[in-house]
Structures are given as structure tokens and as C-alpha cells.
Image (cartoon, rainbow, N blue to C red; front, side):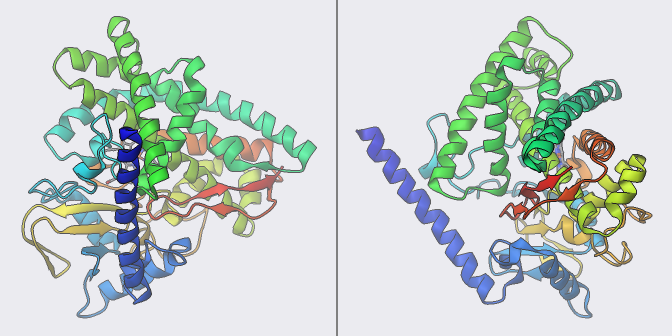
Amino acid sequence: MDVVVSRLVEDAVLAARIGAMRAGGLALAVGGDRVARLLHRPWRRDPYPVYAELRAAQTRPGGGPVRSRIGITALATHASCEAVLRDRRFGVQPAGGGSRLGGRAAETGDGGSLLEPLDLSLLTLDPPDHTRLRRLAQPAFAPRRLAHYRTVAERVTGELLDAAVARSRTEGRFDLVRDLASPLPIAVISALLDVPEVDDERFARWGRALGTALDGVRSPTHARELADARTALRSMLAGLLDQRRADPGEDVLSALATAVDGDGATVDEALALAQLLLVAGFETTTNLIGNAVQALQRTPGHWAALAADPGLAAAAVEETLRFDPPVQLTARFAHEDLEVDGVPLRRDSGVLVLLAAANRDPAVHPDPDRFDLHREQAAPHLAFSGGVHYCLGAPLARLEGEVALRVLAERAPRLRLAGRAVPRVATVLRGPLSLPVTA
Ligand code: HEM
């Protein structure tokens, strides 16, 4: 009974906190605060006009990065975003520590927090811990390992599309997300961690649940789902880690097990890192494939061009990453008093780095709102961020995207949209939840 009561109290506290954060932000959004608008409907359905306004405000004479009343400064130009990502005077945690959402009132039984249900490992660490742990995961993306993942991606894409195209014949359509974009990254990450096939289904279920954590907690129910998935996944990974300590292989978990034994990482650090690889590589890659097919279908002549030359798949991936990136933004904290684009920032103040806005900056990408498969990429896009947190899985994401689009173009050259896409309602992640197509 006590447990039930305390859960109810916790849920009420959580609901109040989430509600208060939402209501405060919404009032500001309605009042014209463009940064707050990125967090709320209807603006976040199509954030690109808001990004354009923020960029215009930043670049006009006497302007500068827009400071929101939610207490954060937004960066919307390519130059300012890239500069902050590379600047060692910024970190992913406040220099003074603390200020993490949630706090003790929302702690779960195993030491997690309901408002921050997931230890996002590298994403929330500054050097030197970040440097030490990132080095441990690096071998998972060595060229020889990538060649192995390519074989897995090609086999799995072939199998998934055989089933999807057959379904399209009998039912008239299939769902690109459910039938290809979602299961493919899970299969590849299973290979990366060498998860036994018997656990694949549970692994996928928890990955799906935890992927939503990258966008924050929506409700007490969502918080509970995340906490439950986290606990279950952690126990599965802990079992695998033990097994690899006894019998190491070539996978990243074996490398982590060796590091734990050699004092290179604690068990908690190893488990959080393994968990991050699942979470960071799942929904992001799903969105990449979904956004690519959507853009190729909606831009006249583009799907036909890819179908005529599936070798253009890599170019399609790169242009999608620029035009409609799966991860729209990230954040940093100033570690000392400094200035960005003429605006002073005090130590520990936060900046929102709008990666998707930077990718449409006309100063570096001519005619930026046009999706163009044949675009000369004049400057690198920021879809994978920059500086020390540059996406560790970027080569794998590119590989999976390229294989998915190439094999799709080969097997379904006459692919067409076959109904309304269901968009994800989120701020950080962007991509369709469902995309009906016909082969
Ligand atoms: C299209 C797919 C992907 C996109 C758009 C993407 C995007 C990003 C971005 C923007 C960051 C940096 C965030 C920041 O600077 O705060 C990041 C970091 C990271 N990504 Fe990816 N990612 C993708 C796929 C993957 C995959 C497939 C994996 C691994 C299986 C992965 C693993 C990671 C890891 C481990 C980090 C943390 C790096 C660090 O903090 O040092 N990502 N990703």
C-alpha cells in the first residue's frame, strides 16, 4: 500500500512539474517567444519558418543570438553553431555542476530519476571522463567492423523489403517506418553489441521505448515506461557484460568488459555507454530513412532519379541530413563568462544550438530550402553535431541510410506515397512515425 501511495504522490509531483514547465513555455510561445515556440504545437510541426526568423534576428544589423525568456539563448547560423560546438569553453554540463532536472523528488528505485530516466553517458559528460569513455567505444566503428555491419544491413534490408513488397502486393501498401526504417537500425545495433537472437525482440521493444527519452519526458506514464524499460535493458546488458567478461568476442560489449576489468571504466559507465549506443543509433537512423523517402517523394523527379541510378543513394542521405536532419538541435553551457556573436553570456548559461537552422543558412548553403539530390555540398552540414561530441555513429548511420535507400530504389523503383504520414510530435527528433507507401 505504501508503495502505491508513494507512487501516486510521485506521479502527482511529476505531473505538476511537467505541467508547469509546459504551461510556462506555452504562454511565452503564444506571446511571441520564438525559442519557446520550438517546444510547442503548432510551431514544432514545421519549425523551419521559426528557424528562419531566429536566423534573421541574429544576422540583422545590431541583432545577435536571440535570448528567450525560458532562460536560454538560441544560435541559428552555421558559423555561430559550429563555433560553439568546437569551443572548449563550452560543455554539456554546467561548470558549477547541478541544475539537472528532476532531482531527488523524482528518483526511481535503482538510482535513476523519472524526469531524466536515462543516463546518456557520453552525451552528458565533459572531458576528461568523456574522452576516456569515448575511446572505449571507438573500436566499434573501425573499418573492419563497419564492413561487418554493411553485410548485416544488406541482408536485413533485403529480408525486410521482400516481406514489405509482398505486403504491398496483397494489401496495396506497406508502412516504410514499421516495415523498414525502424527494424533495420535495431538489427544493426544488435550486431554491434552482439545481442543473441533470442533477445532481439525484447531489445527492440526497450530500444523503441528509450529512444523517446532523447526528447524529454511527456507525462508520468511516459516516465514510468521509460524507467521500466531502462531497468529491464540494464539487467539484460549486465548479464551480457558478465558473459563477455568470461568469454570475450569482438563486439563493443567485450571491449567494455575488458575495460571494466582493467579499471578503465566502472560497471555503471560501461552499461550506460552500451545503452547510449542503442538509444543514439535507433530513432535517429529510423528518422533519417523516413525523412529521406519523404523528401525524395515530395520533390518532383527525385525518386525517379534515384530509381534510375541507385548509386545516388549516398548523395540522397547527405542531402537529407542537411535538409531535414533527424536530430534538430542540441545544447551547451558556457563554462566561463564569454561572448557569442556579440552577445555576452555568463558562466553556466545555456545555449540552444539549432543544427537544423544552421543547415539552412543561406550564407553557406545556396537556396537552402530546396532539397536537391545533385547539390554540391558547399560546406559540411551539422546534422552530426561537431567538436568532441561529433556523432560517434556517423559512419554507421550513413552506411545504413545508403543501404536502405539503394536497396529500396532497386526493389521498389515505382515507390509512391500512399496516404498521410504521421509526424512525430517532438522538438529534438524529427521524422515520420508512420509513412504509408506502395511499391
Ligand atoms: C542519422 C542518424 C544519426 C544522427 C542524425 C545522429 C546525430 C547525433 C548528434 C547530433 C550527436 C551529438 C549531440 C551533441 O553534440 O550534443 C550524436 C552523438 C552520438 N551519436 Fe549519433 N546520430 C545518428 C546515428 C547514430 C548511430 C547509428 C550511433 C551508434 C550506433 C550513434 C551514436 C552516437 C553516440 C555514441 C554519440 C555521443 C558522442 C559523444 O557525445 O561523444 N549515432 N549523434
